[in-house]
Image 1 (tube, rainbow, N blue to C red):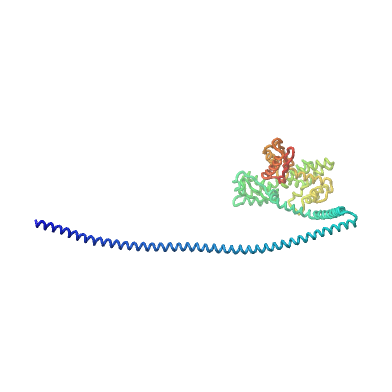
Image 2 (cartoon, rainbow, N blue to C red):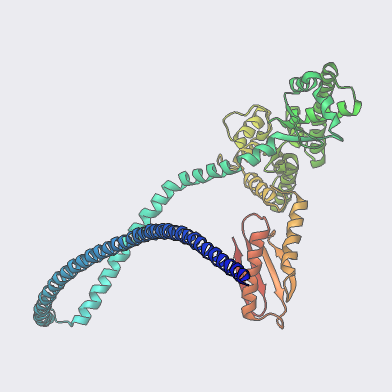
Length: 510
């Protein structure tokens, strides 16, 4: 029993000793862990404090920058406000000074006005006394004296005005000729291009552009041969199915055109053949010119013309003036002269002869520095024409004095032929087309019953339905039609539009 007790006591003591030793060891380990944790915590605390200090410093610097910026802006604004305040103060001071000056001037003006009013009253009284004295001396009233003075001044003004008018008329007569020449020169300058094209260019039409290469030839030999033989410049460009012949002589252009036609038809185009064809064509054209002159003289019943005059008449076929064929124009003038001479009982044959020959001065190749009327008169004298015919030729543009009765007839008939609608600048077809377009343009408006183009297209009469178009609407219609004509059509001069209802409203398209 005692042994067991000792054993149990020993075991218990051993356990207690082990537990105590274990506790001691555990406490030491726990203390080490706590110490390590405490050191780590202190380290973290130090780091966080340092980071907080850095952040605070950064935020502080940014705040200081913002505050400084705002303070700077505020100081600038304050400076501007101070400057504005100073300027306003200066302006107020200036305004006060000006206001005081104005007040002073106002006071002075009031004083002057009062003095002037007093003077005016004094002058009125003096004037009245003087008028009464003058009326008493003259024995007439002021109104009568005023009327007499007005009449006297009227007569003097009329006399002076008549003298001024006479001086103006004399000055106008002196300058009219010069101004007319300036206007003519300006017109020539504006129309020079059109006239040059009209009188110097012919177009030769071909079936295809392949023929252009054959006409040009190898290295341009054929075209050089044509130009050398005819004296005409041949222009072969990109114009489709056409070759342009350029020359001021219409006879040469016609020779070149006929020669090209024969060469293209024959197909043989080379320099030797070109010279042969041009020579033959030239002879044939000379014969044709003589034949045309003879037939024209026979048709008009004119006999005894010099052969050279006959050739000149034939050459007129290939001349044009303002787009009007010269031969047709001369035939028209001759026929008109014959009609007028018949009605007036004058020499019909002489008038017809002068009418046919009045423009022969435009035909000669050499163009001396003479008007065509004087040149034609000289040619007629040279070729033994009668004096009355020569005078009519030379005087049809008032270049010389008219000495015969047929001279004014030739002048008038020349003007009639040139002024005939469609005679110059435009062919008859284009003239008729323009007239139809003019009538159709007005017919498209509502309420229009009929339209008539009169006076060679210079006036348009529009008849409207009175039920559909009122008086006010007719005025507006005239204006609308004139504006449409002005914007959509090309026409010479001006067109007057007259709308006919119960009243007539006129609009002018300029």
